[in-house]
Image (cartoon, rainbow, N blue to C red):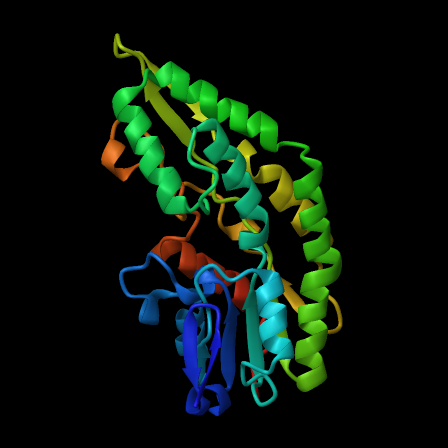
Length: 280
């Protein structure tokens, strides 16, 4: 017998094994896009550093609401763990941002918008469209994203409702567990690079795609008596720590992938270290 949730099928043995530390959350927790997620993701680095028996339950594409429902359905062994980390919320906020960007890039909005589809469309445009036009499209998306009431409401639902409920459900099942929740970093802190037909270089700051909402979420997420907040946004501030890169100088590598690089995961591990209380 097995239970199905999200994109991963757990066996009874996996669900009820006992570990010192379990990592819950989305693809960031899972280590998506790393060469070797099993050893390079922040949860694995943290477990090895502190000598903890550990299992990673991160799932690709998981939203905070989906994580809450999975915990409520007792899909994870939270009752026996001594430490639990939670990475959730980025998908909730990033999805409508990508939807608006996809609209300006003229993607088919009847299909589910994915990072892969956005990346492929950007590469196609860099090969076929004047770069001044591409810059205009992205600027239009940034303007549409900023101060968007729908996304603001999603942020508030996440911080005032869903994430606190995740914490309460975990603590209900394991009152003594040390619980650490990560906040949200801005994956788009680099500058897009464009080239005109005469070779002139132009740039565009991409941080506006997500900055206002990362700040909105993080201003509310603070440590409480029930959980600590690991400030990933404080540590992940440079262009080498996330996979996003939009440059006319390397069209094949163009990507708005928000996931951390190997070094980015090391920095998230440091953010956890900063609030972790060693388990006795």
